[in-house]
Length: 293
Length: 295
Image (cartoon, rainbow over all chains, first blue to last red; front, side, top):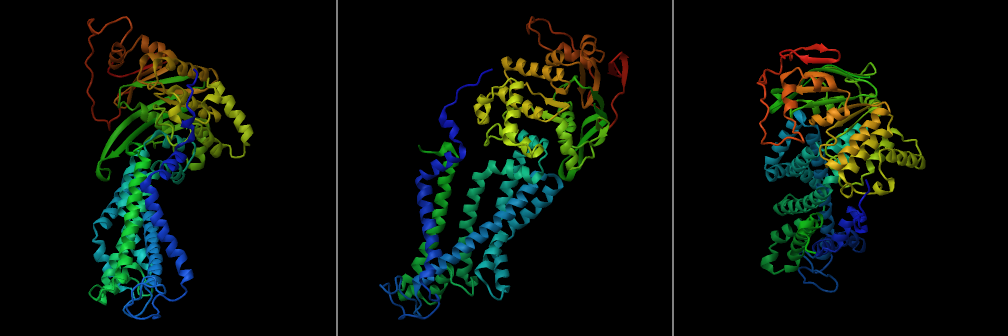
């Protein structure tokens, strides 16, 4: 039996094909540009602004100027400095929350889906319990018991409560994938369960996993902003949410200090919105049916 | 060589494993070197389960499976890996046997990773090339390709090559040609014949009686998880003693007959009873020919 001749285009491989389409998808490019641009601002910015963001350095309630790019607060703090530091904490919360939720969701989902049986039933029960917990109420209770609330503890708390969706989806996927013959074949090659999960099952759902990280990241930023706004934000740092909370507390809206509350609001919206746009774009990349080209 | 003794398999089903489903009941047989043993039977008769138990992909509920006298049902991971050096399997669906996102020859590379970590790449490359040639594949045509770029017959042969990279004694072939088209079937089937010549024992699971007749020395007919008849292929197919075997043989479509011709009268069979009970015992009806009681 002879083989058919295959076109060279097929040999490129799926990974580089995905990258190829990702870099040519306007949604992915625009979304990532905004997210990475703000990230760079948050990461690099503070090195150039060596002042404490809460320091009273300027005239009170002044609009944007050459000295203070985004004006000053009611107390004379530099809004731009706060904004840059706030971006940094927002990304930290988002990243930490996403990583923790992803790690827990992945472990629980894969264990339940791959092992099945009684392990699955117990883990599934746990997942459903955490899923129906009113996360906001729990977070309010926990947050109010912590004496010093930092960005890190906020990220951890958010991460601990946002994994169930990932776990459920991963479990469902592993359920179908573990019955494929190539999993049996890997067992016949003497592979252990963790190796099979990482090397055979996970690559098949890589696109889903990437997208769930993105959604978890955006979700964590949004959740953190909400906690900050109701006054349960970090007590020892500035975040975008606490900026908005402070501006509301000191009636910035009524005093016309728009430069105080508009930038953090726009930034949160831009980050989360861009993440969602990226996600939609990636969906098009991974699912050829949605490609417009 | 490979020996199954009173093997049972029951699954727990339902919430918290409240119900039991018995798939294989009290099956015993042996495979000798250079012998193809066919297991035939209707869907749900437990033939695939037997193949998976031999491959230790599912555990045995009762009974033992021995390879050269060594019980392998209680083996731990390291021992099981040694067992897989000697017993390998090929499955029904060639397209599901390959991870679609990797190149097809990765299945050969993982064998090196697991079983021959010390072998150098060039040495391994030579071995792979020889093995691919021995199963009738052109190495340049199949290496570096994705599964969807290869045909079902090529994929199945590559899986057989994968098994042959190890010094196997037994190959479990679970319906390996039922998803191939007619022209490639005979190639793969003849390849199994070659393996037999080389002294391999083959457990050939199939529902196709003509394939079983073509390739195998001995045959086992299963129904409702139990063996109803077993023995030398010629005797079982030439002189079937159990009513189910007779029905099975009568229902094989034949080249020279049309559907419109008067069909054979099928015999009345016992319905599926309590599967927890031991099945009717096999009695020897001839030399190397056993049939279940009630025939």
